[in-house]
Length: 353
Image (cartoon, rainbow, N blue to C red; front, side, top):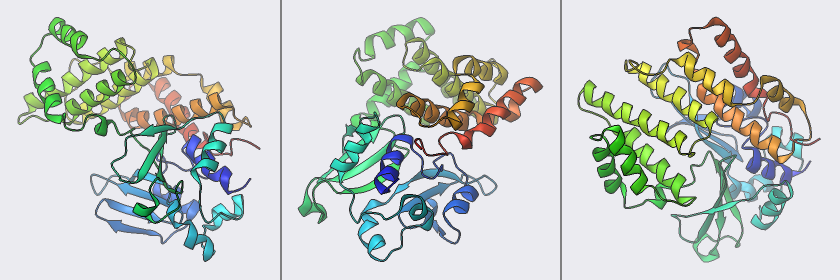
């Protein structure tokens, strides 16, 4: 393997050395080095050279969670010139190039059976891309005068990226807040009729519209516990309709429900909602088998479908993990623990021999 394998695999798997946004800070530091983490306004940053992880936690007793990670490829000239590429990377991939060219990277990604989608960019003189399954993003120089780099130079490879949905709806925040206020007053039949009239009919606009609406509702808060509960319940209603309308697949809908139930329980708002056991059982029924997932950890090479499923499973296991304390069935809890134990092994090995 060479350095282009590192960059291409990072783009399509969303992992590096088996690490990603689902990893813990001790695991990251064990693999890449200690004494490289420092405080930042956003929380903490682990800067290992080419690789960087950002961390955040809401409370002092919470575990640090990854907010972003990836390769700061604009550093390649001086890192390679001074031979400061992380030893863990050099040991596996050998010598790194001093400049990463988008054309070469794109060809390597396509050769692995993946494509890159262009995103709207808020940065002048730059083009942005992402891989929707891995949610890794790319920043590429378009105007050399703006960035003093050759056209096509990849400056950053960071994720997890959300596809810049907020840019697609820039300037429409107030309109969507008005939508949310109106939806809060509607009974079910009227809400269904409103959705029928408003949602776009074509993709990707339809999925993006739903994502933005649900995000606006999720960010609304009430001045009283009763108002807060109304907003959270509207979120549950929209999640249900998104699943019924095919915006979310069955496994995605189950993961969303688990996350919403976890938050609702933390806020003391679980009355009248499905139980956590019911939500977990929905996910288990909608996803693949544990035996198949276990084979994905060992089978090599992984084909594109295997990479995509591995990435999807690792993301979903990470999101459902906090529900475990709320599971009442001992057998169901044991089954979920087996899935959680499997998470670090998915995509940990190179996807090809």
